[in-house]
Amino acid sequence: MNTNRIKSYGKSVIETEISGAKKLFKTINSDFAKIINKLSKIKGKVIVTGVGKSGHIASKISSTMSSTGTLSQYCSPTDMSHGDLGIITKNDAIIIISNSGKSAEFKSLLDFAKKNEVFVIGITSNAKSSLYKLCNIPLLIPNSKEACSIGLAPTTSTTLSLILGDAICVTLMRVKNFKLKDYKKIHPGGALGANLLQVEDIMHTGRKMPIVSENSSMRSVIVEMTKKSFGHVAVKNKKNRLIGIITDGDLRRHIRKALLDVSAKEVMSSKPMLVCKDELVINILEKMNANKITCLFVINNLKERKPIGIIHIHDCIRYVN
Image (cartoon, rainbow, N blue to C red; front, side):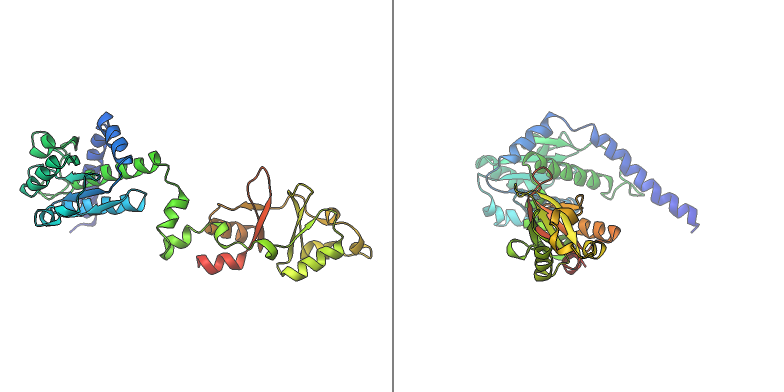
């Protein structure tokens, strides 16, 4: 088949789904806000379910929800009708995804939820369906043309369900003030875990950190630099504020007979590059490489500039690569 025609087919699928997404954008209303407020206060878990292709979407949404600070579990409605209804408690909420809203598999689940006063959210494109009428709050997916060439296979409809699920998950993150440190706790492994490492996770602290006072003699600076083996020394003032650094390069540039008798303040570089403890290691590694720096001192924040650690480029490489 002609290459241009194949490209045209591919683009038409994307255009069709984008058109559906634009319609979905306009449907976000006060019901969406009510759902977010409800889910943000759920004491149990959010059970997400669906049949067929919608089941796959439900599984992905549940996974995203769990990884972003809201306890969630996927379960198929068929399994629930054969005993797995036992996973549902009154503290839970249920999200049911069904384009038609008429799947028979949901009948026992909806009955159980009503009897046990479990909050149910329905995601469907059929406002006349039993799901739309029986759930506590429905979210209506706009009727949009399926991107399938015969207009039958779930394509645009499942994409819109996924987008709406992502909107729920990410909005919940914001409402619950879910931060990077929270995300990091549940993503310790693999490349993602390495990319989430912060400076405070690998920095050298306490007695391992080379540091002198501003009035220390250069004799003391050299002893401290040699003892700690970083080739760098932080210089602090009486208020414990980091005011400069001295590197082995600074020593070479200031070699003179009286060097050992002058103070650290006279030799230090007063505008060193510093990092805060919450910065990502992967970003710091890029900064070090770009500026040809082997060590950076870590401060608690830019205002107080209290030295709390030191990080070496080899530390970064060890964890990131």
